[in-house]
Image 1: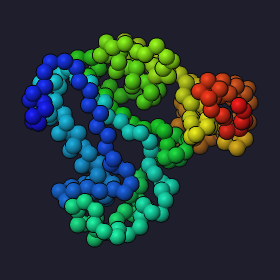
Image 2: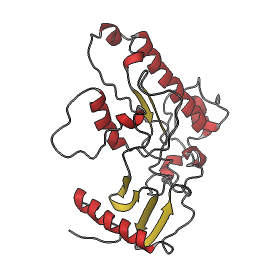
Image 3: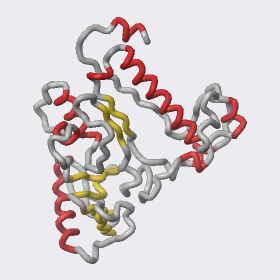
Image 4: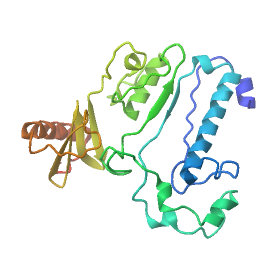
Length: 265
C-alpha cells in the first residue's frame, strides 16, 4: 500500500487512471509478453487486467472497496486504419521488453478488431464509438447485471456528481444522471438519443433507429436487430429519415456544429 493511502484522512476522493494501452504502438512487460496465448494485443489486455486488479487490491487494503464506485471503460474501438508509422520497425529500443524489439515492433493485426460491429476508430459506424464498460458500487449496483442500455461518457460526469451528493454547475450539461438506471430503480436508460460527431455531426440515434448521412448518402439502421449495420433501410422508411435529419439539424445548431449533409452558419 502506498504512503498516500496510509496517510489518507476521511473524506471523498477521486482517482482518474488513464491507460495509454491498448493503444498503438503496443507495449508490455517481459512478465506478460507471450503469456496470453492471444498475441501481443492479448498480452497487453492481460497486463491491463493485472493493473486494474492492483488498483482494486489497494482499495481493499485501505478499507475503501465497499464505499467506492469503480468504473472501467474504453474511449473508442480499434484503430484499424492506423497510419504506416505505427508499424514501422523500431529504430531504437522502447521500454524494457527485448521481445518486442526482436519482433520488429507492432504489426497490422495488433490493432485489434471491432468484432461483428462495422467500422473502427474515427468512424461513426458502431465499431468506433460503441464500447463495453463495467461499473461496480457494492450495496448499490447489483453485481453480475448485464445491460445494453444506452449510456455515454458524457453521462458519467453528471452521474458521479449526483452519487457524491455534489452540486452541478448552472450552465447546460449534456450528461444525464444514470443513477436510477444503474441502481435498478428504473429498468430503462433515460438516454434515448445519441449524436455521432467527427468534427461535424454525421449521424444520430433516436430510440432503435440510427441515421448516418455522410456526403448526402443516407443510411438508416435499426439498432435493435441490426447493430452490425448491415441493412440500410433508408428507402423503406423515408419518413424516419426525414425525422432524424430534422433532429440532426436541431442538435447541430444547439452545439454550434454543422451536419455532414448540410452546412450552415
